[in-house]
Image 1 (tube, rainbow, N blue to C red):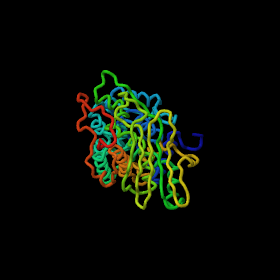
Image 2: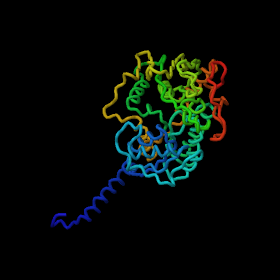
Image 3: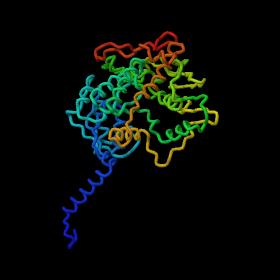
Image 4: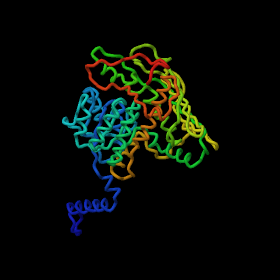
Length: 422
């Protein structure tokens, strides 16, 4: 330092460090934000890798320290992508310096989820496929880990009840559980629905919710793939793996109805089928369109439309019709400085873990929104009206009890309305 001060550079460094510590100690929020967090990624596909990148982008003092997947190539591809900043993440910020995954924290195979839960991670990102989600979330909560889980919560009523039980266990342990229904963390939706609940459009009389777009992807079978590997690699083609498109994707829009109406439906009557997809095996046993009429208390009805048709119109949106006006998600205005909700949900998760914001547990709400999707599929497949209470008690389980690369698994046929219980 300058002559005459009597303070050396070393003294100055000690002084400023102490001042910084004093500031943190005087500010509980600053102290909470300074707490380091370790994250593990279970499920290293596109969505899981994107979620990992978004966690690292949105939060400071956080590191990805463990990874697990069924397949070595997918895990290494994800790790390489994160290190090269090449993921589906919507933000170009660098994440490499927040990735520190030693070989001892890399796990591959059917039991990989067990290995990652034995590490010292604070938060598990559950980015695997819907069929395994209840099992993985339950195991994570049992292991004392906070969880960010992708949606949907499950593919059948048995899985939903397992997921809800895990959510309640998380509540008892005060373990954060945040779900990938990112509209819940989007500032524009939050503002609009807050106004709706305050009466801005009056009493809700009806809603319609759409996810009508093209098929996300398919993968032809390779000769070396077993039945199980084919189902998992080409997962958007098999109902037992993803729940059909109404469950895996349309859950986002049905979640908005669940949020706005703040109630569960009485029943649903639905139809659907497979018109655009050909009989090519790469399309598996999935349908390509559903339409549902959900009946709610007080005579409110929600019309739901979801489909995967190449080159077709339709859109992705939600509308609510009230006695004083209409809410249309396509007309919402994004607030200045709004953070991408795919990033915001991970900020909220970390802040809940650190105690910066009130404790968050979205387990039951995402399970109930998923159940809307499942009961819509159940009604369409059977051709019958399905009541909420009956669906929640149903013993329907479409996921095989054992998962094994050497076993045979059903690869069809395509459900015919009125002949299948799922």
